[in-house]
Image 1 (tube, helix red, strand yellow):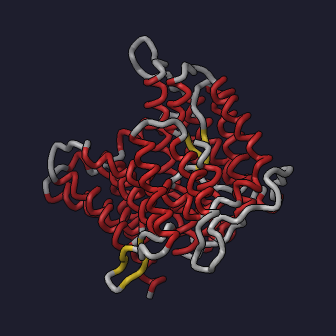
Image 2 (cartoon, helix red, strand yellow):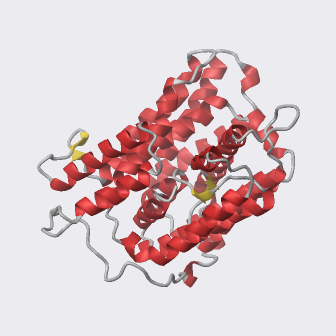
Image 3 (tube, rainbow, N blue to C red):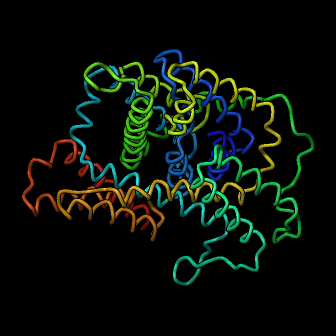
Length: 414
């Protein structure tokens, strides 16, 4: 999961944030979040800025909606507070029981499509055309470099090579030194030095703007809900997978996940927003530590220590070009989309909403619109098929929130 130190800053920089600052805040959030999980819950689970929320933070909230980064950090902070508070009560179980599984799948698939789309455009494989997007010119050396990096990443992942993503980033970065970009200069430019003392950007400590959030509350509430839902369900699924693989189960066969684990994950997002980065969540790459025999928080302490040491190499991280991280984004997106083939539904109607969310995301590049459309379509199908029990109060409440969001979004665009 070391690749996050290169990928997350690249994504957050799209929101106008300094890339060097984002490298340091990414490392700080990963260190603190992982230590909280290790020392509080004693689980072999590592945490870092989430690959789904960072895209939504930068591309949708800041770039598309025009929300200042400080307001966006405030939204992440509030979603973390809600997550942590619910983890201390029975509210977490009620949310899991009351939220429709097709929409949970749709969120994961649509975000996967969005991440892959960003990777394709960042790497130059997809470029604007009269039809929307077209394939990049193979006469462009950077396009060939990105395409080669994508093939390498896919082959390494399929071959189950450890650190496949990191190897790809390093390889493409090295090759980029010998390839010229459109400006006539090498794609990879060497820094003045490889190591340096890390300097935390103090202006990003507690970067909140509650007044700005209050001024645009109706528009921003749905996005804040997304940050919460994404962290909530991603963390739940990841932690369940890791603990089950590690054999950490109670006598009744249920995974050894108490309130401490979920509270630590929610608190990590609070810390992440407080130090100047996006939602912090559990990483499925934690399975690597489990496969190596890790069963306790010692794994997390080790990961946190390695992240801390890497902060001294921040100049080397800044030389990584966007074309080197683009293949990783595409592979991550494809991995999230791969679940489409394994989803089995009781009725075909339950597949329509997730598929529609993916299509809307790919064609428009607007994830929030796809989420709103998916929720409303699912509810309409449940009404049409008279499946009243699936119209839970939570679902109906979200329908109202996102319907208001669509109205306000339309007015803003007008």
